[in-house]
Length: 121
Image (tube, rainbow, N blue to C red; front, top):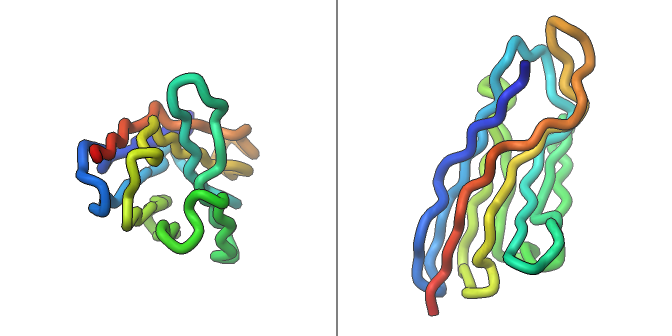
């Protein structure tokens, strides 16, 4: 069974930086795409950024110019470097992995448990 474990969230002042990490485990051969989403109270979950197996990155409007997504393919890990954080970035950040090839075949999309990011003004 594929599992995603996120780390790196926390409390930071406005203008500060955080780096989120998400490691996938579970007899994985390859992962087509990994990404980060976020959900603030009362809001729908929204895309922050994702990155494909070809290292093509896609950013949500809120992340453009401030956040950078990257992957370590050997470690099945995705990172999100967040700079210039704003109070409106406060949310639970979720990692996901899509089109995962494992010893058991192609697995469905998997989500992490989420990590809280709080930005104080």
